[in-house]
Amino acid sequence: MQTFDFIIVGSGSAGSVLAERLSASGRFSVLVLEAGGTDRRFYVQMPLGYGKTFFDPAVNWNYKTESDPGLAGNVDHWPRGRLLGGSSSINAMVWIRGAREDFDAWAAAGNPGWGFDDLLPAFKGLEDNQAGANQWRGVGGPLHITDCSKAVHPLTKRYLAAASQAGLPFNPDFNGASQEGVGIYQITTRNGRRMSAARAFLRPAMKRKNVHVEINALATRIVFEGKRAVGIEYLQNGETKTARAGREVILSGGSINSPQLLQLSGVGPSSLLGALGIPILHANENVGANLQDHVGINYTFKGRLPTLNQILRPWWGKLLVGMQYILMRSGPLSLSMNNAGGFFRTDPALSRPNMQLYFQAFSTVIPKSGERPILTPDPWPGFSIGLSNCRPSSRGEIMIRSSNPRDYPKIVANAFSTEADVAEMLAAVKFVRKIASMPDMADIIREEVLPGPSITSDADLILDFRKRSGTVYHPVSTCRMGPDAARAVVDPRLRVHGLAGLRVIDASIFPDNITGNTNAASIVTGWKGAELVLEDQK
Image (cartoon, rainbow, N blue to C red; front, side):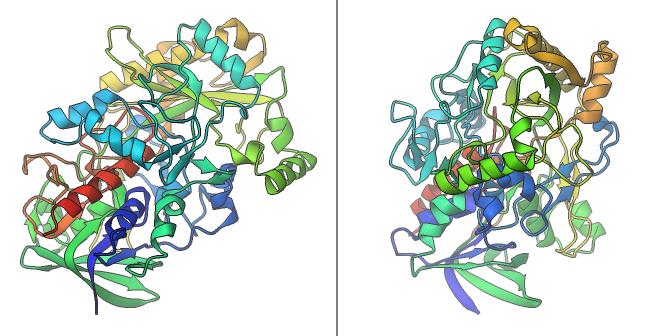
């Protein structure tokens, strides 16, 4: 049995950062256990290639939720990265930190050190932002952020103009002074390649002698001595192995795998563990509870002007953009599907935005089950305006089904389970139509394809978004942080309440969801978490 100072379970957005930060001084040895394999795959590194990873079991857990009444009984597909870099290796790469008020609310809830002003130096320190340094942005850090303003599809300018006509100001930087308005998204790429957490943090750390990474290593149980975590049991190549942690075990498996591993190890709701015959080491009803997620929908239009459909669908277009990408690392394949977007309020009385927008200069109305044909879009000029809620009040849970670590947990999302969430989504989809009705968009729209002009009443709009909405892949809060052990899983220093030598450091610790994409906040959680771990080492 090998012994390391720290064992990190999961090499995703937070885990990769932890590996780099904890090993940087050379003082500590670090073992990273990753259930998946390598990230050195063409469609992982090519930004628009993530449509190919959306259902690929070689790199994706491919989770499914339970049938969700809030989504008209649909079973939602939840992709999660199962490879080095975790979900940062298969995501849409949009770089959004979240609103100042999000993090200030975390601190106000009894989590000192987690306010926006506390985290801003970390956000700036980890960034190498192509847009340049200012009071909000950083340069010279390990994670390159690309400014896409000169590379987006020409239709993007019409979207921005129409949104302005609908009352939204242009915002040059959603990670600047405020989020509200519309603008072009910054993305995590560098020189036309995906800039995952593995590429930015883990790969450099792996060059150090004090860092050891095991792939295809599925953590099955936390090993305890009394109530102190001392190691991890894992499966690799059909063999059960154990590694020992001299200082701490850190779970960075994300909002699904971290609560799952805690529950498998006897840390979780007592009734659940008892029913499954798992000895209860430490009862905590919050493990796997308080699940929050962003839910979104696209409105899709047939256009009068060419879109990316006319380039990405025909063989000659594929050849053209393929050569452009291979030779110059530029063109559509070097970008995210979301060229632009924005944030808006469904009610002017709200103090800050509660909805996020996405603009896609292509459309995929005709996908078959089990595919996401980003690289083979519709045969007519199409584009989509999408949106998702930012701070829904609906709550779900993630609970294991059995004591077998290979069994996927039961994901109950409970989307649109509150009247408030339904009401704000209804107002939001009406606003999308308002943007589409503005002169700069209306002039180029031939017809609304989805949901279509026959869907007009509130009842029909609600039924439509229940049928067609789904996760936008931002689950959080299943091991939430808080000072009260009766309401949280980890304390403000990310130590698991009631146990020693064990922390959770990933998006599952978010006390509440943030306004926007969660990858940046997950990465900064790893950065901040590493600071806390190092401060506590004697």
